[in-house]
Image 1 (cartoon, rainbow, N blue to C red):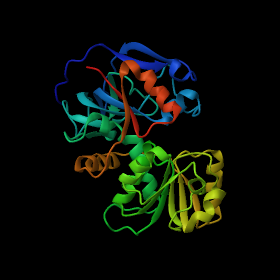
Image 2 (spheres, one colour):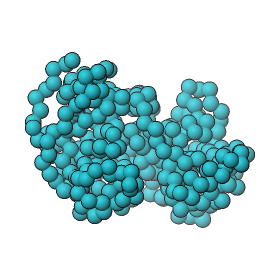
Image 3 (cartoon, rainbow, N blue to C red):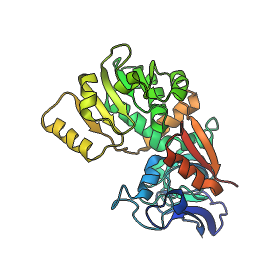
Image 4 (tube, rainbow, N blue to C red):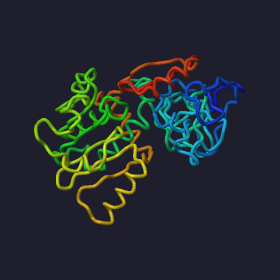
Length: 335
């Protein structure tokens, strides 16, 4: 086992002691540095990114599943350097720059140090910054799995499908547009007017302002039926999508509610060709390695909305809650 670097006994972190409270509920604390157990690595964090699920957990939307315990240090998507490894770790060693997705039950990303599973930790090449890498795990991972769910392939063997990406200027949407083009799909996208040029520049073939009647209709300007929809927003019912789909079209809902889950179950038992498919990310190392590789090769870009120091984590948290970010909100750990 590689020799661990010297780490302090305590670290700065941001946590909440109770559900609710938004940014005002976050507290800056000094807590013990965690230790790496079997198949775990200890990271000195350089960057973390906030996803909507992070503040939804704080809000109580995922209770009683999450948070598992209080107080809770939130955020799972991080980049940093390995400073210690537990027994059984293979593939990474002390000194490696890495990207990782922390355990959702344990969190830990808004801190100077965090423990990650070696199974969800991948090396970060020099061509990929910490902020860029930290944007990947949930947002890009969800986009990738959503596109695969509608039949997208990234080895050149896929069919020329038509896909709609809603909320295309958000964290997941911006990755979905780029990944869809890498899979040679025809991409129609919706977003606000101020982001239309950006979304177009990342590969969308058709971009609509969701505030206009045309954009609100979600109909392809070229008259195409959608083989798949990567649905990144809320408030649109299945019945609205149904006439826009091809004969076997699928709507991949990345923020499913109970109604979506029940509709999906009905589609399965009735063998419906058109389907609503709720998607919950299934994190895995292979996907994360694939995405980091695309960043290294310049085939994928992490669009960064803003960066905040850990001391201003509350401002970053509020920015995510406000919902107007274009791309990822990054918290950087001061050395």
